[in-house]
Image (cartoon, rainbow, N blue to C red; front, side, top):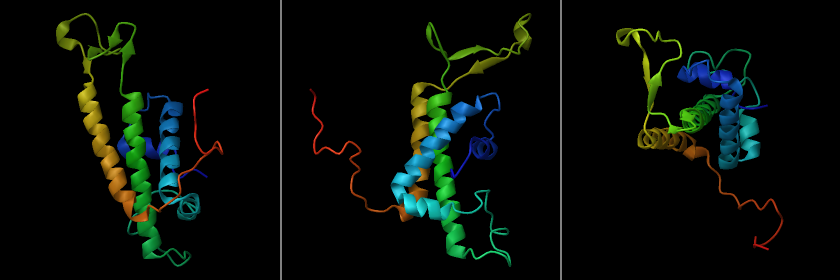
Length: 167
C-alpha cells in the first residue's frame, strides 16, 4: 500500500485540482520509492502498515490502538518527509509551461476576458532559478525529516553484474 496518494498531497499543499491526478500521483510514487530506499522497505512497510491519514497529536492514540508516541512521531516525520519530497517532484514536473516557442514566463489566463487590458488576468510563472531554489528547499526539508530513520545499505545492483560497460 503506498504511503501517500495524490489526494493527500493536493490537500496538504493546496495544489490546484486542474493538474491531472496522474501527473501528481507519479510524483507521489517517486517520493514513496525515495523513502523506501532511504529507510528500507521493511521499515517503510512497518511505518505505513496502518491508516496513512494525517496524524495529529490529539488523534494518534486512543484506547483501541497500540501505537506508541515514538511510532506516531516516526509516522508523522516520515509522512512529512515524503510529502515534501513529492511536492519537490510536483514543482519540478508540473510547474513549467512549455509551448512550441519555448518556456512560458507569462501568459493570459484561459478564463480571462480578452476584451480590455484592465480585466485581463496574466499568469506569471517562476523562473528556472526560482524553481530550482524552491525544489532545493523542499528536498532539504524532506532530508532533514527523514534523516533520523535512514539506514546504511549496500548499493543495489539490479542488473547482477559487477561493472556496467558500453558494448
